[in-house]
Image (cartoon, rainbow, N blue to C red; front, side):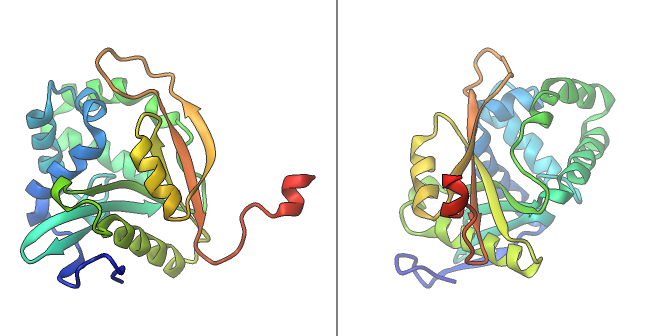
Length: 225
C-alpha cells in the first residue's frame, strides 16, 4: 500500500469517533471559507469545532464511518472521506439529522438554506466511488501520503464492484489539479457554480474521474465519432 516515496512508518486505518479533533482540522483544510459559509461560522476555529462535533455522528458525509486516516506513529497526518455516489443522498440526509441533533433546528435550517445550491452541483454520478475529502497535513506533503490514500479509495471501489473513482477539485486549486492528474485522474466536466457568497473562495470545480478496473473510459473510436 506504500509508495516508493512514502516511509514505511505511515499506515492507513479506519477512523473512530475519538479522532474527531485532528480529523476536523484536516477536513477544514479542504473546505476553508466554503466550510465557514456552509456552517455559518466566521473563521477556522468555529468551523473546526462544528466538524469535530459532527464527526462522531453516524452515516453522514463528514462521519468517521466514511473516513480513513494516514497515521505516522500516534500522529494523524492525512485523511480521506469517500463513499459510493449512490449513498450520497442518504448521507446528505443524515448530515441534516446530525446537525439538527447537535445544533438545533434554526442552525440546521440556516445551513440548508446556505447549502441548497451546492446540493444540485454535478460532482458525482451513480455507480461511482466518490472521494469527497482528501487532506494531508502541511508539514507532511510531497511524501506520497495523498497517493496512498487515493489507492485505498480505488481498492474500496473495486471491492464494491464499482468501475470508477471520481472527485472534485476547486477551480482555483491548481496544485491539487496537477496532483490528481499525476495520479491518473482526468477532467470529465468543468463546472462554474451558481453560488454567490461574499468572502467565499469558491467559483466551481473540475469534476475528475479515473477507471479502477484497467479499462479505458474514453475509447478512441468513441472520441473520434
